[in-house]
Amino acid sequence: MSTQSTLIAVAAVAMLALSACAVTRDQQSVGEYIDDTAITTAVKAKHAQSSDVAATSISVETLNGTVMLSGFATSDGEKAMAESLAREVKGVTSIENQIVVRR
Image (cartoon, rainbow, N blue to C red; front, side, top):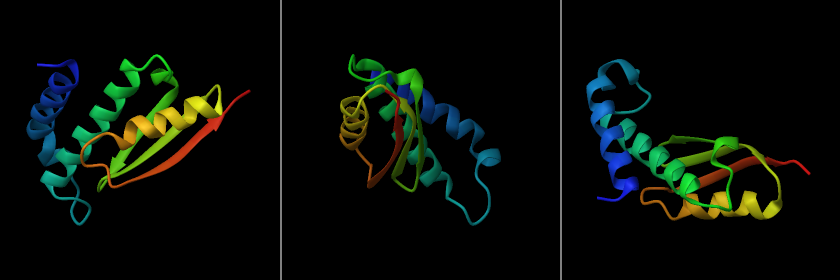
C-alpha cells in the first residue's frame, strides 16, 4: 500500500469516527465530508512527496470537490506545480489557487 493510500485510509477511518460532530446541518452530508477530507489528504500527500513544492507553506481545504490552495510560494513555478499536483487527485472538480508568490 502506498503512503498516499495509507494516509487516505487513515483519514477516512478517523472521519467516520468523528463525522457526527464534524458535519453541520445543511452544509454537507457525511459522505461529502469524508470525500472532501480524502481529497485534502491526497493533495497534501502529493505536495509532501514533491521536491518542487514546500508543502509546509501551502494550506489545502476542500469543499464539495473544490480545492482551495493558500499560503506562500517562492516562485510562479512552485505555485503552478502545487495547482498541477492538486488537479491530479481523483475527485477534484475545481481549484481556487490563492497562493501568494514571495520573491
